[in-house]
Each structure stands twice: as C-alpha cells, then as structure tokens.
Image (cartoon, rainbow, N blue to C red; front, side, top):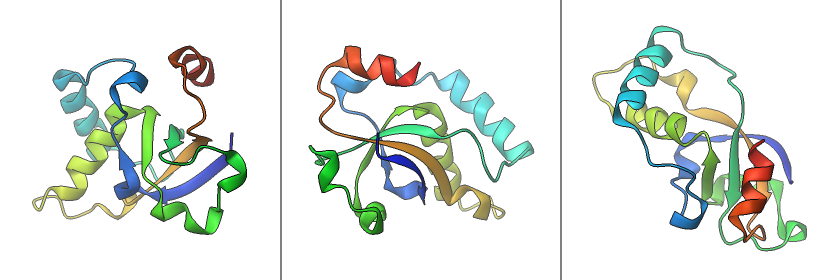
Length: 120
C-alpha cells in the first residue's frame, strides 16, 4: 500500500475487467447520487485504487499523484456518481466533490484474490 491521499476525482477510472468485483447497479447509483446531493460530505471513507501502470511501489511519486490513472476497485459506485455530478451542468454546488480520498496500491497486485483481501 502506498498510503492515503487526497486526489482529483477526475483522476479516477473504472477498473479493468479482472479487477471489477461487480457491475454497476443503476438503482444503487441513483439512490447514492440523491444521498450525496442531499448530504454532501467533505471527507468520506477512502476509495481503494490501483495506480495504473505503476508496477513497483518504489516507482511511486506522491508529487505526481494527479497524473496517475487510478483504477477504483473499492468504491466504484461512488466514483461513477461523483463523476456524474461533476459533469452535470444543472448542479451548481459541486466543489465538495472535486477531491476524494483514496488508499493507493501499486499495480503489482495481479491476482483478484489479493484484491479482495485488500478490500476487506
């Protein structure tokens, strides 16, 4: 693990198929969106991400964090809703959604079994 970091939400991407634990549920997305809009949080629980293209944790550079593509493997529904909110021109109060907290891991976790251990 490379630590807990605050990143731009726009750096977050959907996980590749082998890292996807479940498909996005449209009903859950809509309920979550309504919940987040009615009670915006400035600091929610962190999402679990893998820094795409980063194979060794020693290659990680914190000062370049916003340049990494961060695959969300825990919190993917939140990622999708936050990105929808940021793109929605009818929503005006969205500053609190620009940044999220993430727990970063390097991409050397190749087995989905290892990923499920991380999420627990």
